[in-house]
Image 1 (spheres, rainbow, N blue to C red):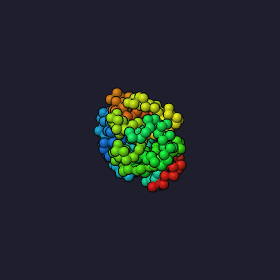
Image 2 (image 1 turned 180 degrees about the horizontal axis):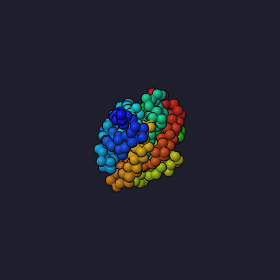
Image 3 (image 1 turned 45 degrees about the vertical axis):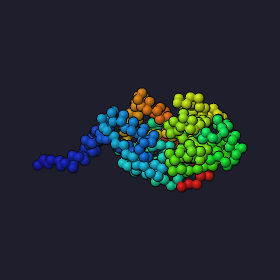
Image 4 (image 1 turned 60 degrees about the vertical axis):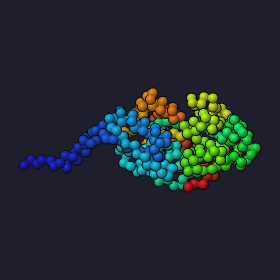
Length: 324
């Protein structure tokens, strides 16, 4: 008597042959969840939603943007690190989640290198060094000279201890050989409010956060911490032009997946990222937020993350910032 194969046997055979129906579906076959480890309304959220819209247009699958804020981006980043590596949960990470957090937290619940598969750096946004108008310095050189003549009398605000703005301030203190005092705030808005009010002297902040205040003369910009000048303030020199070669600080915003995500998914996501970053409306949106489109390869992005981790770890060590 001829026996019929049972359904479990048929399924096992299909799996062995690598042609199971689910595996045969092109990626993505369902909506992708994009985790933003910060609140809605910030640059990471704005850029992630622009990315999600274009990805949805291309794949005919509407992505879900999931804001999981808290603990300097650690909560959302950990969630993605522990998610299935199937290409359906992504992280819209930042400089903070992957390069400055490791420099100031003694033990993170994720490994920024081993737990993630980089896709691409979506955009870079450099910091401006801004001062209150009462500070008698119109250039970076003038500020350094002023700080040397008044050691310990100038203070700088940051988003919090260990934040990218804090580390940028410590890097300036170290390379310029000046004694300026750190004042940590719980986030960017209260820091900017106190700077505008003249309660602190200076700070590093992203271009969109302070550009309106610079243009209305409520703050004075002295330099931009990027490799080249920014189009919105073409007369503003870079730190390198002002005598501090290689001084760069700011935020990047990039797409990452859990480690072990199939190469097919990484390749598709990278291709879509590069494609959308060439679109005029996306480039205009980034420019309006003071950011530049990047779109590097997964390998280039991975190398960038490791370089930045080493750089900020060095700054934190030299500044003797206590680990949290």
